[in-house]
Amino acid sequence: MMRLLLLILVFCLALPTHAEGFISRLLNQPVPGGVAVIDLGPAVSAPRAHYQDKPVLVIHEDAKRWIAIVGLPLSTKPGTQQITLQNHNGRQTLGFEVGSKHYQEQRISIKNKQQVNPNQANLKRINRELAEQTRAYRQFSPRQPSNLLFDKPVNGPLSSPFGLRRFFNGEERNPHSGLDFAASRGTPIKAPAAGKVILLGDYFFNGKTVFVDHGQGLISMFCHLSEIGVKLGDELPRGGVLGKVGATGRATGPHLHWNVSLNDARIDPAIFIGAFKP
Figure 1: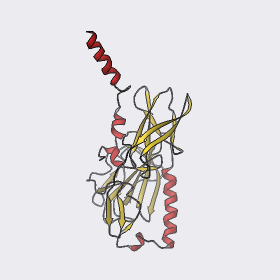
Figure 2: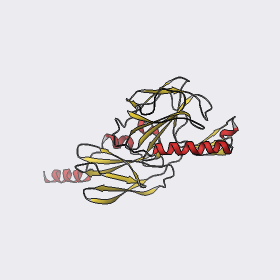
Figure 3: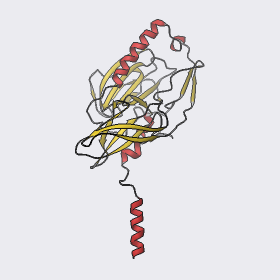
Figure 4: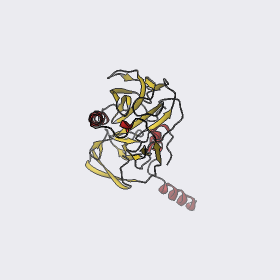
């Protein structure tokens, strides 16, 4: 009997202090372009957490524990990273580890040379539009996301994955910052989670575009639309139609390009729909 009790004690000591929750299992992919889920422990109210001086999403994992859900830019170096935490114990830092991930290459031929090497007038427009979109990505509203297991915004197969090193007409440009879905022109695009429409535009590269704020720095961008079906400030329910698939902007054919941004870091949307490939 004593031997059995000792075996049970050793087994219990070997267990983690808490069972990993659903959100951690779904989202914790701590690689460049991925997501790190960090246990913040118990607290009466939500702790405040920052990564690279930007506020991060904090939610209850269960009835007792809080977790931080941190977006990791593609530029993140593998190794130890830190968040800062402000709670009833004061200010502290928490470390977490980031692994490595290899992203493949994609080579695209573009007929419109201005979409590869734009002139000064177009560069001025591009920079203005980039600043506008950057401000949208940096918004941080207090609302809690309605869901973190996202719905697919369109019914269609995944085409170009996130993180591809892209070459347009043989010239390297920024990596692919979202996930592409192959879908025919006019296919309805649905909000993967509830949110507020915070930006609309018809941009040089992105074409007709909609930004939706899901809460606490979790923001979706949908671009290359043929038609925008919402107005600025609209509140969208989960599954609400926001527009239709098209090929506006820099696109070689109809498809949906979907970005997900978390604490102003563009991350792999596949993580949120259970389609991430390590």
